[in-house]
Image (cartoon, rainbow over the protein chains, first blue to last red):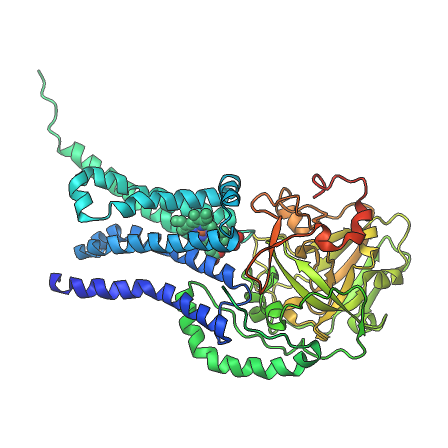
Length: 214
Length: 317
Ligand code: HEM
């Protein structure tokens, strides 16, 4: 397996770029009178497109651990970092869409929005929590921090996932179908972790030697 | 910077041309569409068919109530709009309303009136000369368009039934046909979609009963056969596919007000000073423009201000 890892990584990297390349292509079409294009409201399309792919990549990142155990494919773990970094990358694009198209780089408006609009607050929480994860994504950081502490920090991805779902629920007008689908995914993935954790705990306490009568 | 591609086409030229242009592009774009849907994360708009709408309306008169602002291209008006009966994505109505049957179409007008009536669409269209009124249209979501609607003042229609003195409000009930409308899922809105106006708002000359746009009968996705156009209120007040108009003495319940009373008031006048709880109403994006514009009080239709003199519009939002 290991000799293919580099190629799998390269393939995945290219695949992860497809959504942004697609948006760029539609943007090009929009400005050149070609079809298909970004539609009647191109700026909204870009905001929604990048937002959708941010949450998609968060979900994919969260899937890796259960997938590698359930499918018996341990090498999948080597893809997690890339998926997580792409989640952050799309999150930054999405944030830039908001900053540029919605707030037009007016910083005072931006601050007011973050405080006043609940869905923006939730989005900011989701994105901000990804920053330390992105910064400590290197092997060097893992070594420096120690596996346990690194892992504890990186559990923040769950908070990001939950905050992202809340962000989505709060921004839709009436149709909760799409955000609830993501909520269900997060619930299943989080449920799996809790289940695993409880199983390990009870296994551990069963293996502990019984206290000696004194 | 985004540069919109669609050149301004005069209304007169639009009708025949966009038919075959759309079809041709549809074939060319069909394979690309699949790929794009894949990468964009959700469905792309499909090209609309104009099997039912699209018939030119003869004898249209110009109106001095029209704005001189640049009209939003036909394609944008007909492929980007909210019509939840045909899906909650703005590209869905154009696709899902394709086969919606809009003939025969009748409207029942009843309630506190001397002469309740059921009128056929053809009879309604003959009540007055069709007028083209180019109005600004501001959606509660923060985007706006400029549309050449065809119709006439709603008051012309309402006078047919001789409203009684007790009548204070007008309720509009729209079609809720689950067989034809795939969007009629529970848990979104209470169907059928209902809207309402105060009687004086309904009789205001700007309020239109509308059966066309861009010189032709309404495309299905824009509310065929008959819709309301109330240009100083958020778009959702202008109900589509109206089948019943009822005069009442009590404020009627409306679909959005029932769904979220703290977000969508009965009046829902365009008002830059009253934010939606979740987003600002101070600015809007005119489709086709990069920078946002300031939203105007009553969407710029100041003549309606007298309807609300003495009212606290922050409370009666
Ligand atoms: C990890 C972080 C985030 C995720 C996963 C995320 C995800 C999403 C999703 C899925 C949508 C809806 C797309 C659709 O309707 O098709 C969306 C919309 C949006 N997001 Fe985010 N988002 C994040 C962070 C942010 C941040 C930080 C901001 C701004 C500060 C923001 C602003 C918006 C805006 C303005 C919309 C459009 C709302 C509308 O159209 O009404 N998001 N986001």
